[in-house]
Amino acid sequence: MDFTWSLFIDLGMVAVALLAATAIRHRVRFFQRYLIPNALTAGFLLLPFYNYVAPLLGVSSAHLGELVYHLLSISFISMTLRANAPQASSGDGRIFATSVATLWQFGVQALVGLLFTLFMMRTFMPDLFPSFGFLLPLGFVQGPGQAFAIGSGWERFGFEGAGSIGLTFAAMGFVFASFGGVFLINVGIRRKWLTEDFLRGLDTSAVKSGIFPSRKRRPVGAEMTTESEAIDSFTFHIALVLAVYLLAYLILLGITTALTQIGPLFADLAENLWGINFIFSALTGILVRTVMRRTGLDFAVDSKTLTRISGFSVDYMVAAAIGAISIVVVKAYLIPILLLSLIAGVLALVLVPWFCSRIFVDHQFHRTMMIFGVSTGTLPTGLALLRVIDPEFETPVASDYMYASGLTFVFAIPFILAINLPAYAATTGNMMYFWAGIGVSVAYILFVLVAFLFIARGRAFASKRHVWLHPRRGEDGAASEER
Image (cartoon, rainbow, N blue to C red):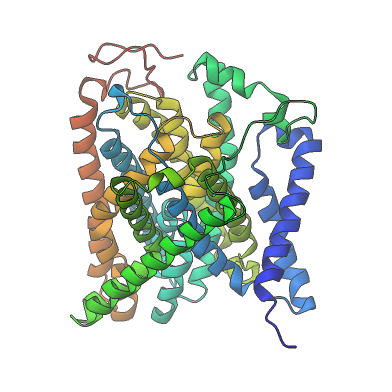
C-alpha cells in the first residue's frame, strides 16, 4: 500500500529532538542555569539534520514550515478558548496597553530594518532586496509562520529564498528571546523585580532540570470534563480546537474571496491576510468562547487541558521553525541577518523593560517577559518565558495578550496594506515606495508614543535614565526606586 508518511516523519523527528533536548536539560548544568527551553535546543538539533543528513535519506524539510504555520494558529485558539483569568482592578486598560507595547517594538524594528537595508543597499550590498528589512519585524514580532508565508510571497517579486530568510530571523529571535530572556529573569531575581512568591517558585530543582522528581507530588495538569465511556476529555478538547480552526479557515476564505473581487490592491491584501491567519484564528476562538459562555456550554471546557494543548503547539512549533531553516539559502545573507538581529535584540533588551515597567501597573515583570518574548522570539517564546515564572498562567498576562491580539490586528491593518511597498520599489525601480514604507514605520512609532504618554501619564518619564521603574513608586510621577 502507498501511504504518505511525510507528516509523521516530521512529527517523529521533532519528537525525538524534543526528547533528546529534555534529557540534555535534565543532565547538563549549563542548560539548567540559563533555563534554555527544550524546544529551542531541539530546534538546533534538527537544524543540521534537515540540512545535511535528511537529504541523503530522501527526507525534505519542506513541510516543517507548514507545520509551524498551522501550530501557531492552534496555539492561539487553545489560549483564547480558555476561561478568563481573574481580573484585577489595577489592570484596567491593560489590553490596550499590551497592544501598544507590542506595536512599540513592531514599529521600532520595522524602521530599524528598513534603515539598515537602505544603508546596505548604498554601501556593501547594492543588490539587497528592499523588503529585506521588513523580515525583521515579521520574524521577530509576527512569528515564523508569518515570516515564512509573507516572505514566500515576495519570491514572486524576485526575492529568492525570502521564506527561509524569514524563518532565520525568527530563529535568531528565538536565540535572543532565550538568552536575553534568561538574562532579564536573572536580573529580575537579583534586583527583586519579582515578588517573593514567584521567587520561591523559581528556586526549585524541577524548574531548573525541567522534570519533577519521582518522589514529589506532581501538579495536576488537566481535569476531566467528559465521561471517557462517551468521549475522552482530551479528545473532546482537541476536537473543539480543530473545529474552531476549520471555522477560522472558512471565515478567512470568505474574506479573501470577497477582497480579490474588488481589485489588484485588495487582492494583494487578501494574499497577505493568510500570513496572519493566527489573528483570525484567535478572533474566531474568542467568538466561539463568547457564544459558549452565553449559551451556558462553557462548563464542558477545561482551561488546564487547553493550556496543555497550547504548550504542545508551542514546543513543537519552536523546534520545527528552527529545523526548517535552509542553511544554503541563508549563507548569502548571513552577515546582514546577524548584524540586524544583533541591533534589534539589544534594542529590545533595553527598550522593552523600560517601556513595560512604566506603561503597566500590575504584573510588570510578567508582562515585560511576555512582551520581550513576542518582540524577539515571537509568541511561542513569549509564552515559554512567561511559563518560567508563571508555569500555569495564573496571572492574566497570557490571556490579556490573546485578547490584545485582536486590537493589535486592527492597528496593524495599515502595516499589512503597506507590507509590499518596498517590494514594489524593486519591481518598479521607484524608491518612493521604499520611503513610503519608512513613513508607515515612523507613523507607528509616533502613535505608540502618544498612546504611551496617555496611558503612563506621570510614570512615562519617571527615572527615565533607569531601565526599570520599580512598581512600588512612580504612580504620581515621583522619582521611582530603581534596584
